[in-house]
Image 1: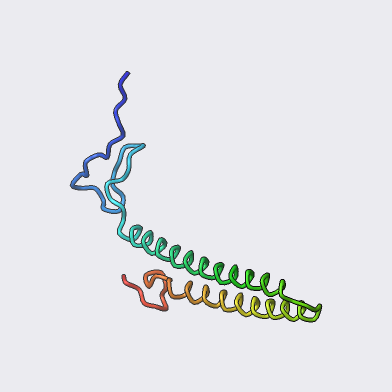
Image 2: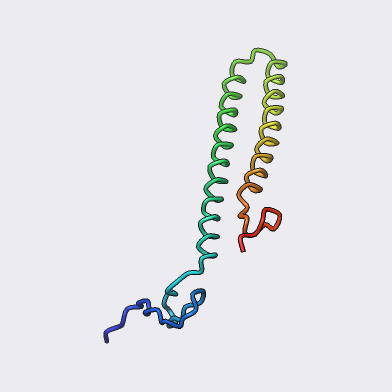
Amino acid sequence: MAQTPNVRPAASANADATTSQTRPGTMPDTMPDTMIVQSVLFADMAGTFGAELLRFASRRMAAQAELLVGLSQCRTVQDLLDRQMDFMRCAGADYAEGFSTMAKLAQSTQPAATDPARGNAD
């Protein structure tokens, strides 16, 4: 028995642009512009956050590698403790800066259409 493939139906002249009429199991003819804009903004925001997270992780891994090299060069217990304390101080500062950067990114990537304080496009 031959099955008919799921094909998009032709758009009717009286179909609402935001909710096109489709048969069950088919894709709508159009996607509301706001959904497209939000999808693009979300993808951009995810890319921005992902890139920043990778930069942060890269910096922390480099610092960890430097610590291990430094620890191997320590000759006294005091040298060992000093290196570890320096590493912890730098790690704390890096994490504080990283959280601050992520918060700024979150604020800067908010779309104006959903934030009344930035103005509404409607």
